[in-house]
Length: 304
Length: 304
Image 1 (cartoon, chains in turn brown, cyan):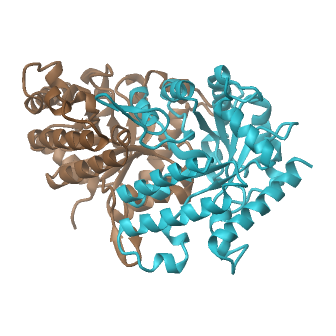
Image 2: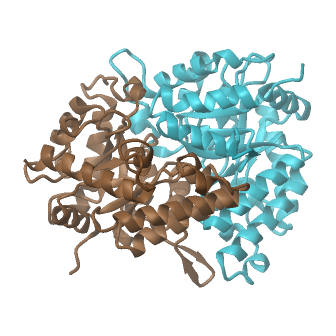
Image 3: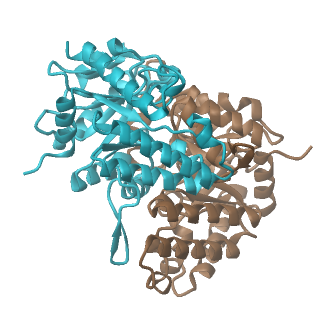
């Protein structure tokens, strides 16, 4: 029997000693001037973004386990942008990377199943089967409750995929609703967390983690610690490291005693490193250098 | 001074005495056999869906104020599906319909602003400005709190657009989290509702309704009644009528004493009427007949 997705992800993290994921939130503005200058149309911009992503992937695929592709940065360029999204996720997959589509989709059951077909499952046109935007994992929003999540979980099981459900997000006002306490003593983020742990139960793999993960921001270490206790079988996708202010020390509470249980995203810190931490280098070399810095920073906090 | 979007929508509803919106949740499976049969690829399917939508719009644009286009049904067909989405919203706009993009987007502020550029505002490529998926209103999910909604509200003000924030959704398990009561006595849906009312305050128009609306399901009349009291300046987008089980009588609590305050969606009930309530008719004639039936059903409950 071959290993399931979450087991393969964890094994690869173990192998590289690198629980980090590069976020390809590639705004046109992030590109070097010589790539931007000739562009006039959405198509030009989307092609330049695709080229930028390919070069970033070429320079990092051997040292990172996964990429997270934030679809909003592609939808912003319309249909052409979504071609760039599709090409980017297909290219990353070909290079052996696990692909997380950061789409935060959500809807009532019948509609959620359409989203799930787009990103996790497949869609039929008469006898022909297609996978339009084939991701390994996607992020989803659970505000609608269980029947809005179920179609995703069904495809997770049927197609060996995974999801990360928003639990405690990294943004400053995430507490406005998520940290409010219910009469039963749980905050909203705790209630969501408990549901997520429960939804994942049937898919727990050999390392003890399920295919139904949670988004837990690095910027809220107190809440992350509570959630790690509450959700022992749930893998965390941790945004907020770097540009948003979360440190390796803040997020080490997301990991278990075996240095497992989370994968940490950095987007701007890696893909715009050539403008900041590694100014003077070519953008792709700078991204590799920043990815190595991140690995070492996380390694020290989590493994040592 | 020209009227703002929400004023124009309400004026058009008054004029037609029709607070209904046709939901173009056009799955390929909904198409008549003769349109489906020749299709082999995603491109074929997307083109057939576009043609189907155009004919539905042609037969209904004079009797309805707006359409709601559920993007999940287009994402399901990949890049080609999103072309169909774009073509459909542009065609509906050209016909004078107000277009609601049902996208339920949500993210941290910087990312939410990308979504907002895609659907409400505009995006620049060097000196050229584009509006990739130009909707009048979109739906959004407020689980992340205020700073995830702010970018949308800014574009609402700057581009004369609108949003509907999920408050109490129509699906069976919406109560799992939304109806849980916080220690302060408010349920989650009430807390969300109060925030939405507040976010809309600066945009209240001449009929007393703001450009920041709420999604309130027809399937939960008790909650809708509470929210109508709690959110006097908030326009409701009401899903769940028809196929999901909500009746005109259930949802009349969403309206004020002037028969205003809500717009009611029906998707499958209209676009698949040729298979059900108006079997035997051509799909577009059946849709028109079903749209007229809906108008009369709502009119009796709300205006009489």
